[in-house]
Length: 631
Ligand code: BES
Ligand code: ZN
Image 1 (cartoon, helix red, strand yellow):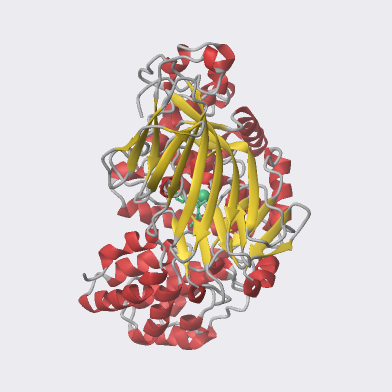
Image 2 (cartoon, helix red, strand yellow):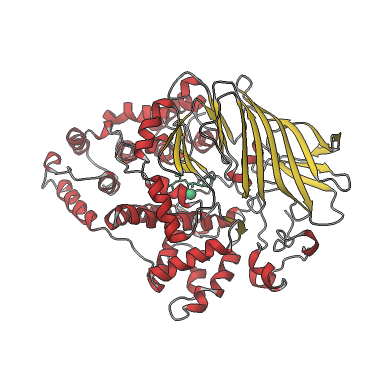
């Protein structure tokens, strides 16, 4: 996209401005007057979109698609409402990836269009010539069976084994693989959709869902709040609904429904607690959709309907911080959105901070402390592993694949910076700041610079003796952690350190360790902090005492299998193989593949598992792991 003014995009066209943005946010903002300045987004080139919203902006999408499970294609049309930002603008540029465009029409008449050169990261620009006064553009198209943002599952890949399943995953830049649009988080649109499916399946979207809709294969949706394209989502399957509270419920395949509703029964309380602290929930209902295990993420905050991996249904609510996280995005991410992928930390750092606060409110400080220590340790290992450039909160993604730079930096480092501000000015003052921040920027997409300018006018002005801009800039623009950054502590974990040490130095046998009161968190802390190299006999002892190889908790199993791979502990390899074949969640499988790839034997096993699993893996999981196997 061009480097043109973004500040005025959301004000009526007659007030809009086309001044080029020069330099920092400060300069750009000072070129604009009063309230428009405060209310509207700043420059921030989106290097991950071909689109030209600074000339012509899409404001609404009307989608009509039929899901063809035989052909693995979504077929239909997208009608886009457009607003010209520049009087003479006559070419609308949309993002696409592997889409088959059949025709483009304006007022029922075909218009000229062309597909430009494809880029491996960005896809293919679709340029459409617009007649003067065109207000709506319709693109007739179908998707490719390999669409990067869609996974088509056979019945065998579902829990019920009877019906096929489809789900989309648009973040970061995969919406363009199933809808031609301006695929940039700085463009916000409302949408309506009609989805046709086989009659016995239910379609759900990141929009208004009627849990009691007639199952007839014809479903309509509307999303009245303006959202960025990466939050458009669709799933189709043999889904049923169970309410968890007045505003919350869960969609899942019948076999998982009860367990999911029980596991996540605290969702309504989470919603209420978050509202009390951070202002109204602006999205009407909040439901969860439980996906098949190939879902490549833990969760995805699609508005009104978070998409959730089934791997967190542990039976004891020990992994529900993931729900708190996706719910928290309803404030940080969905209400206030990162304007470009460089600003992802505004979404994920604020959300991680909020998640910790929700967990603390609901389950108390011990649980919060344990989760914060685990998060901090995970951050430390990313800092150790990543090049300095990737340790910055505001990361330079030019020319890079937005999926590849996924790390704990935007999450845990972002949250830690907010924790530091909280500690310096006090919790009450910081909560008030957050409440105002969500209100001030509601339904806007903002850059890191806009955030900093807002901070100048609020906390940096009000607490000059406690906070400094230099310190904040160090957090955002420098690698690593600033000296004196907060360091989470957990008393519960001190005991675990002691127990681990005793066992390692043979002062205590594994079956003498009293783990009756250990939760998942103690286990993770115990396992994650074992030395990399352990004798087989020690591993056997631990496994015999606690059946770790058979752990049904997917996070504990992950930590244990990492140890098994590092030490070539063969009794765990059957489980390892099954784990890799059955789970597609990248955070769980990628570290295992990476570790296996370090030895020829490991690579052989990885290759076998990968090849067996590949047909069931999501395109993102395939891409993330194919480099670890033999060709
Ligand atoms: N929005 C993210 C997932 C995402 C981020 C997808 C960037 C594509 C690009 C989601 O909210 C998330 O953070 N998921 C985590 C959950 C965890 C941190 C609790 C995941 O999937 O592991
Ligand atoms: Zn997130």
